Length: 345
Image (cartoon, rainbow, N blue to C red; front, side, top):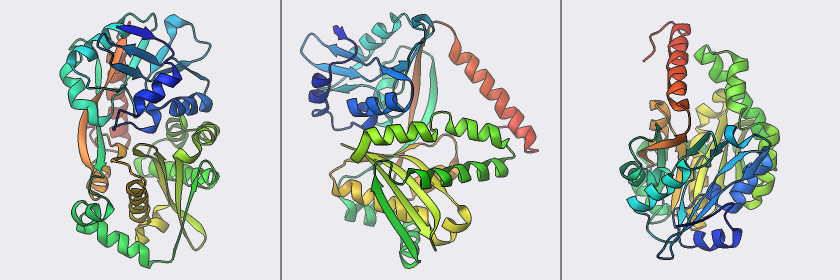
């Protein structure tokens, strides 16, 4: 297996044409956007198999960090792109290559659609973190989705929003980002109050990889691939979503003023419009992103017909970092449970 890093851009673009499950952050432009939004560099890997098949693994790492302390990471919705089927032997060969990397850690997160195949092939000794994501299959077009996959509650909510005096705007790139980001911070503060979570810590967690400056740089780089939808009530921002769209669409960020958006069901209308646009532009999948263990969020996504996928993030590491992270997370969840006056699950 021949390996080249960073992956040659012309080859990468060719391989993308043969993979129908690609999302924006699996493209060269997506990697460029991530690198533009933070001090990252492209360390993607190109694999050429003996039978001529070609694989691309998108990866980034922080600039200026010594190699032995570096963490190489695949995008949030990403991992391997290929111009042919990927079987267990190919995946094991990729992980064997990653195990030789002279870095502290390589973090690989396959798309939810590829999760089952990866779980069956990745060596058992590779540490992993369980994930749950929701994806809507757009096959059949929007009329079929509206009739057969949106449930009755979603259809009623959309009709209610359409009858309300909502102003809905959609722009490409970063045109609406300042307005969306103000709403995003408002949502973070509301969640912190409801959860009895320190506001400063909640803002830090939410903006660690989504600061305003980073998002502006990413969206400017993505251009037409980034769409921001906003719903306004009497001129005030009520709800907003960010969708990244190319071969497939990825709902990547959402925000709302619950008092304004809730009564008029603005979130349902924005999702309906974004899904309709993805269908019109030929997308096959609409990823609604990671859901975690939130049943409220899972119910919201299921209203549109999105299906839950269990998958994993894999960590090829030289030190037991994953075990330490899981331990710290359990402690944090226990403390949060005590702060709320309840018992951590």
